[in-house]
Image 1 (spheres, rainbow, N blue to C red):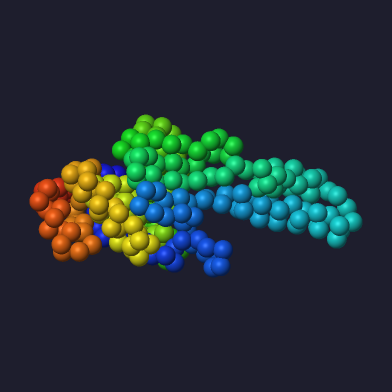
Image 2 (image 1 turned 90 degrees about the vertical axis):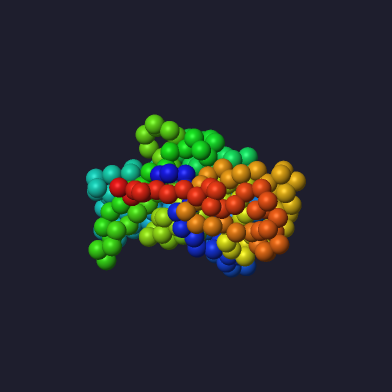
Length: 238
């Protein structure tokens, strides 16, 4: 995938931030410096392993016999159930301030942190039940096998918007992306870029990335304009 803002992403609104009250939200933390998402992998293994383990035990009690397939089922599901309680926290961190991305590795392996421009992002598409193409984004080290599914607040069919959001957010020389979750930080972010002399964007864009107010836009355009850093990708998905 090119490091390019392709289109306007879905706004990151406060409804996407997890709170104790709502128990909902993709993000655990959001500000102008970093975004944090807890993969909550341990919950999947607790539920999956626990369900299969409980089923095997219940069936053996109902039939009053402990057959070989019950033993096999327990042996297979028990490690997953145990992993659910011992799994380390798996985090996605989009560190805008330092230009780093962190994504989870497998099982007990530590999370991987690397410079965002050095990451390799690819896409995988398959047909969904409705016949529509499902496109998922995967991130990995350059020229390294495997990887992790990229997570944001976008749905599975919004891969282009999702990638645009990530690239836009990770470009600390541009204004913050759309969304009221960033509104409290926009003024401070503008003043930071102003103090730094409004350095040019790190990544190009196919769309304008405007400032919050016309006054701010006019001030920033003394240093650079969107059209000066316009990029175009002829082929993103093929």
